[in-house]
Amino acid sequence: MKIIFFVVCLALILTTAMSAVAADQTQTFSTSAGPVKITPIYHASTLIEAGGKVIYLDPAKPANVSGLPKADLILITDIHGDHMDPELIQEISKPDTEIISSPAVAETVKSANAIANGETTKWDGWTIKAIPAYNLKRGPALGKLYHDKGRGNGYVLTYGGKRFYFSGDTENIPEMRALKNIDVAFVCMNLPYTMPPEEAADAVKAFHPKIVIPYHYKGSDLSVFQKALAGTGIQVRLLNWYPDTK
Image 1 (cartoon, rainbow, N blue to C red):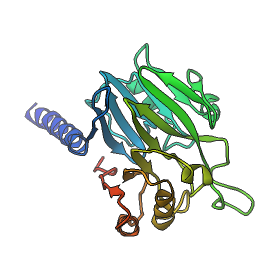
Image 2 (cartoon, helix red, strand yellow; image 1 turned 180 degrees about the vertical axis):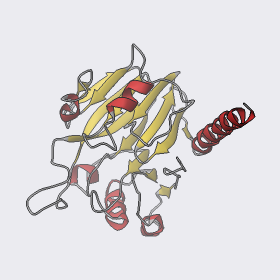
Image 3 (tube, rainbow, N blue to C red; image 1 turned 90 degrees about the vertical axis):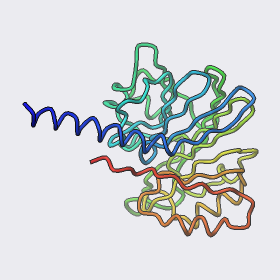
């Protein structure tokens, strides 16, 4: 009995510790509608809180959502398992949870409201625009791409006058480079699937957000990204998107 009690207590301690790591990484941004809090969970999985509402972006295993609130809205960028995870979607959902995704994702997540590249929708004080996310040259074989144009969405989320960009899986595409007035950008980088840090930095220089936060970066050297943006006036914030989930 004592051994069982010890194991249960240890599990609770570890769960609390892992949640605390995420909380320590929370970024708070002021807007005219009140603060927006953004917390990295794992890889591309992100928690966004504002106005008493809870939004998850790309909740997918092995993200640890223990102790985190249920979702009011879930945003999904792509069909790959590190972005679209029906089991985790079900775990964080409640009866009135809404889901917004690309049309390709909606073929599997049937309850999702689909918006295609370039389309805009509104949700509870947020304006949500789908931005293209795709490969220009990288793929698993000659003539094939990891992410075809039109399949996945990045998102520009506007709340209280502030614009937050989440790139999704993409390379250094013209649509990213053409973005305007982005306050905070979350930009992917990982090979072979998206782009290396130097390419990501080149894209960021083109649309010049006030703040950039690398995410979806497993295996990338973030110091290369940070050095490439030195002296540009763009603030680079490095967060831990890969906490110990064992």
